[in-house]
Image (cartoon, rainbow, N blue to C red; front, side):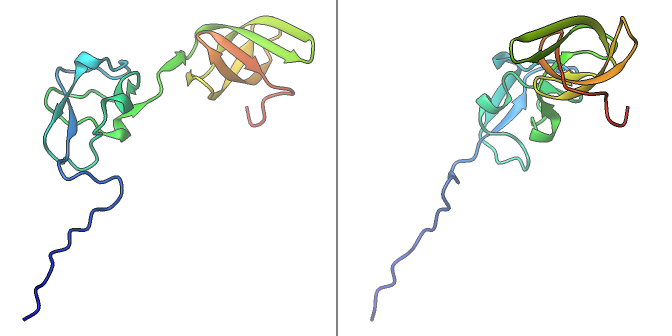
Length: 145
């Protein structure tokens, strides 16, 4: 008789012992996750993150209750500019830099495009969030504003 060898196939990146992240407390919407907000459990929860590094520093999009899984869909980059906040508008081209005061018409995270209004002229422009309260204005008026 021929001996049959048992073969175990493991896909790359798939671990045998699955872990998932859960909330340790009630985390309000728009909160930035800290290490103490999450716990790792030995369970394969569909859609839940498994690496704490993927969650820490991200903002919650909705309330996450204690013991509930932390899903990738529930997290996003933290908001750097709130809607209606006063912001500094900067236009840069070559060696030229122009700055003005403005008001954010949308909220945005780092690198996102948002609409802003220049307070002096009341012109609506589009810019990229470059930091807390800082918008880099793009050339030309806001398309579709």
